[in-house]
Length: 230
Ligand code: ADP
Image 1 (cartoon, helix red, strand yellow):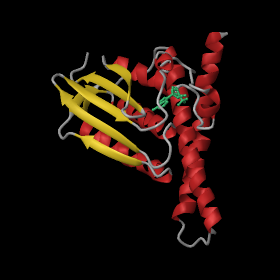
Image 2 (cartoon, rainbow, N blue to C red):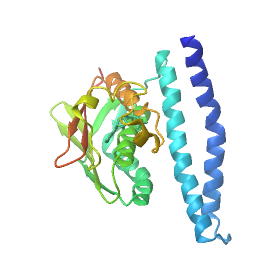
Image 3 (cartoon, rainbow, N blue to C red):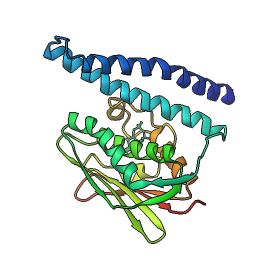
């Protein structure tokens, strides 16, 4: 039964990829069509379609990766990764979404950070943490992405000034399908998969992830990764 469910998740998320990619391209076409005479309302709707289809595709990617990681076939391609460049790239990808919510995304990224790892997986890890910081923060607050070298490790942390996580829930948020306060979380469109995937990625790289309180409010997701492969 479980294996069937897992196979279904893998297949269904895989099948959703192509139509989603087509939708994203169509929306992009509309946004870039200089001859179109869209009303402000239509433009706003197109922008909404864009950010929601981005969200949906992140969700399907997470579902697919998790279904696969259960089968233990999550591929890890270890190579030298330029973490400085990766952090900057992901931050700029996310800035479209932060702007929409009037969030400020601050980058404190040291130069010349490199490590042995899987670039795709590390990129997904950063996206999950930044996406959560954005989802669970009110408008006009600040999110900080920090990347620094500490001895033989890299520290990547994402801090927000959002709703925060109670001590009781801190133990559970890395469990699959766990979501704090279902009603609040549901309106943000997640499934409770992001952090369980983040934990799997961190473990694959021989690192650790901790959740701390930000002062005076919000959350810090603190990731420590060895610079050399396991
Ligand atoms: P999802 O965001 O899809 O619900 P996650 O596994 O990424 O799933 O997160 C699990 C839960 O942890 C979320 O539902 C949310 O309640 C809580 N959470 C995660 N990150 C944050 C954050 N930065 N601030 C507050 N709550 C958070």
